[in-house]
Length: 365
Image (cartoon, rainbow, N blue to C red; front, side, top):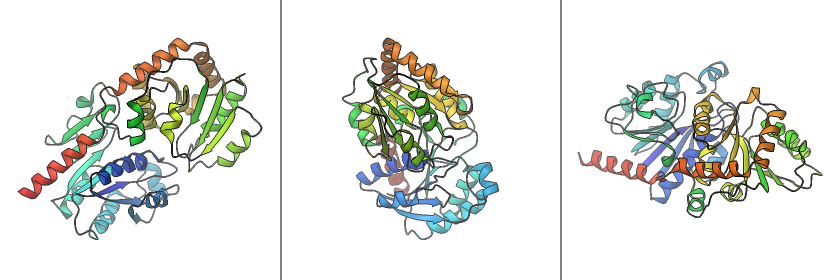
């Protein structure tokens, strides 16, 4: 199969959509399929990073900043659809278009099908706030009412995959999951990571909170995302602190998570990386699309949800860390619940197999 992925990263959007699409791309490549990306040149894009992984990237130019503030696409949907079609025309064969973008809906998808009806569409989404035209649909978040949320929003013929057992996670997490055991609850190491850009400055807030606690016997690791605009300030703030270690844009996140007893970070796709490794966590909501997932995981007992970032203070973080350190049994229970959330992990393999079977079916007609 030849698969084209339409997804973006930016200072506003974050890096999560691209990271999970790269995970899908790796799985497709491993199964001898071909993958191409289409990305818009937003500020904070990951185009060079995607290319460094060996993928061809078509770049969509032009960003209307007023429009971008409204829907994250950067231009009108019909402009984006036409630009995407222009890219597809340069490919002799396209079997699938994968869409992972909160600003794209059925209108955009219809334009792709009007250009080439034989194309199959795979949509990755979790907002349930608009209609889609697709053959395969994935919402990897934890919801009690997935079928109800998407009623009348998906074609009856679409194959749907719901829940974190289908989360798009890198091989390093899947391999580590097979050997992981629940944490014992004793906290000897803490990891702080608020995503690729951390535009609201949560990392520095957490560092200031940690400095106020007497945690000299606990190893504290601060991970700085590749698009974090306060990288140098973060590095400087941790100088001369013997138990603080800073790491810049790591590539071994699963290994780091295996080694930590408590994770302080954001909601979003990193949630499932923590859960599959049974990592207890203190979570701050950084964006609207993280609210529902974080509340659901909190309800399941698999994280402590501090709420939206603008309500979270250093005192809030201090109280949560102090509680975790002083209540090892509760930390142990949370670790077990994290693993239970993932359940019988299926991953992307079943989805890719479905894509292959649908491709073969269409070619045989």
